Amino acid sequence: MLLKLYSIFVLLLDITALIIKSIIALFETLYGKIVPAPEKSVVGEVVLISGTGHGIGRELAFKFGSLGSIVVCVDINKEGNDATAQEIINRGGKAHAYICDVSKREEVQKLGEKIRREVGNVTILVNNAGIMPCHPYEKSSAEEIRKIFDVNVFAHFWMLETFLPSMIENNHGHVVGISSIAGVLGLTNLVPYCASKFAVRGLMEAINEECREDARNLQVRFTTIYPYMVDTGLCQKPKIRFPSLLGLLPVQVAAAHIVTAVRRNVEETSIPSSLLIINNLCRLLPIKVCRLLKDFLDSGVESHD
Image 1 (cartoon, rainbow, N blue to C red):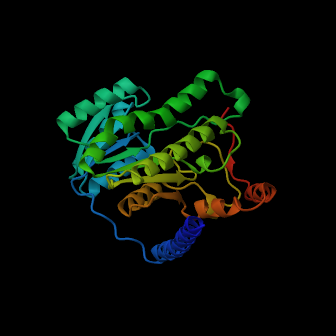
Image 2: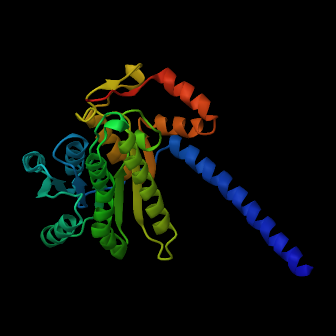
Image 3: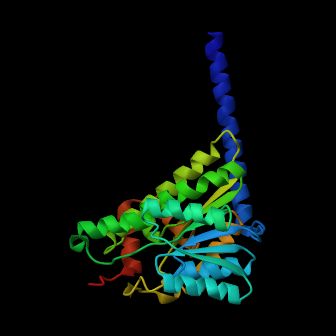
């Protein structure tokens, strides 16, 4: 009887502690929205970015280069990738260019060995490379679906496998996963793409939790980014009812938002930041209400075929 009473008492204490800690965490989050955390320095950090041949990847490379980072540009497109690295050097920064198909595990492993030898350990990894075919699911071939997952999902695994161990060993590092708003809600003409970006969200959340719960008190940070439509060329036929609210975002704006999120150790954010909050609130409502709001906004992508 005494043991049962003791167990109940301990449970009540745990519940009370949970409530108090939750209230404190809520106020800390609200305070952080009003007074953002200071941005950490990235001077001297070895920043590997995949997909630097164009678009967000290229702009991220320029941003990190201007902040004093050693930028490692990785892309399958040699011409565009070399041009990005050279531009960083022309601006007075430090950059290295490597050609790699990040969807292939063996190539990523060889890339890792080469970078460690020639540059050093990667301390910030930005998994940005991705592809986005836009058409109804019935027009998606098996080969195309596999390619989407190879580039958009499995490449994240191969890059983590190659570069995360040194971050854990040195207890210092940051991993950025570029997901998408299509990774938090389903969109027409993007069925395999949405599935791949949902997978990135799950991967990043799970690996973050695994490191957070590690007994070694790891200081490796993780940031997941959910951009809306960015003017990179992938979204060729955007459908936008309210351009002032949900228009195509310039790549410079998206890149600046991502770099700021990394420097403030933000765990997840959308671009614009309000979209993730709106989505999370909508998930509390009946699905029919969510669909009514989605139909009202009438935004997405038309088929490219």
